[in-house]
Length: 178
Image 1: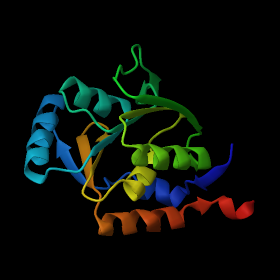
Image 2 (image 1 turned 180 degrees about the vertical axis):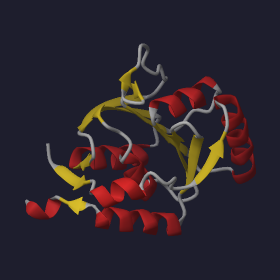
Image 3 (image 1 turned 90 degrees about the horizontal axis):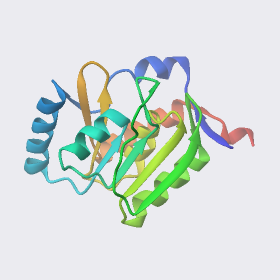
């Protein structure tokens, strides 16, 4: 398994700050606000990263094009993994604090295929948000959970993609070592 990027201690602290707009409140409040945001902005597609936020979206009839989960919530195994009707389910390995080449390729392919895809990660999915934002079509929403606060909505604008590219450049780039 080839590692493309590894998280540095500096970026670990920096990435605790939300990458987009935080919607605070209970699951119901955040979903209601998110629905209003979707109606107003009409995103091209919605992609969710994380089990709790993905489950909340699906249970409220918001069906993301891509769902990235690891079947854990706050690092604890879920009793019942998300049941999400998709056209494709892909399993990948992505160790904690890394982004693998496999994850990058699967996410790029999933974003291009036009099908509803669930990506189940053996390892950690959090950093994959960066890859999703970078490669998602412009004017999409990438949604992830902010523990104990609510959900974060990242709009995939050219400016946001440039910011994410800068973060990835600052990560320990393991590809060079090949």
